[in-house]
Length: 265
Image (tube, rainbow, N blue to C red; front, side):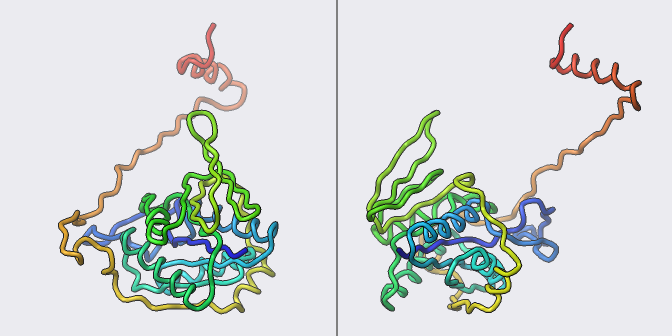
């Protein structure tokens, strides 16, 4: 079994986001970076599938040279290979991203490397789009299931389950297939120190890409949306009220609980 998991380098969700002077990009100088939570689960799922079924796994990302850090983190928990589709650091739209991934998968196939399962996160933590996995599946004419919270592979069939209306939808799709998983399908493990040391010695296969043009509406001569500026949501200030100290605060706590409807007399 051969599994490819695609991940994205995103700003840490707990960091404070600021914009560049022209408000068209996120200022990244003071941000840490990580992998989208859904894709952390996809990476963990790839490792578990190979542990259970045997075979090999590959992690792929499209991004700047610094995205190699996220690839090494994936290898530190057990992914075998890593591929970096290196860009100049500018954001790529989902259409161009999917096209670049499809080109990379076809190049792998031409070199004799084929994948039984393509794993994605359900959506990226920064842009929130759900498109890349579906576009890749459509371009490669593969079955696709998204929103997956349970995945079992056996005898050339992937059984995927996703929540729906208080119950479960169950899909059985033949391999090769594309599956986009949601956070909660598993609990991702943390890279160990020995794992990080081993990952540091592994080679990352790198392809340098030209600036995004493939698939973009502008490049195709089709009118499409144009980014004017980004806008940060308004910050909500917090307020702390000290009700009292020690036993003297007990009655004030009771009064507060009554006011908010938790207690009644």
